[in-house]
Length: 100
Image (cartoon, rainbow, N blue to C red; front, side):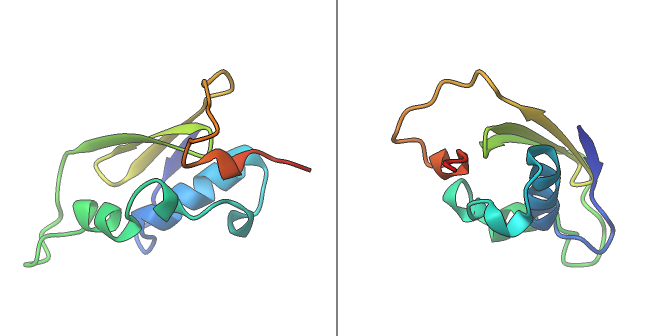
């Protein structure tokens, strides 16, 4: 799935919204993104410079809630579900597993 980050939307919020859409769950039911990385640092990485000039370029990939998230230029997210991702009980994002 691809997701375009809205102009008034933070990157961290976009990640949670996109993953919830892929997972078919409400954003509030997902574990905090902070279990995987610092959301403020993620937002700052792609925020405009202090003079208001937009940052250009950059790519970041990480795993959150059984999905590989790739963020390009702070504008586009690609979400790839990892159905066969090996998991151990020590994984920080294991709370994404639906235990109903």
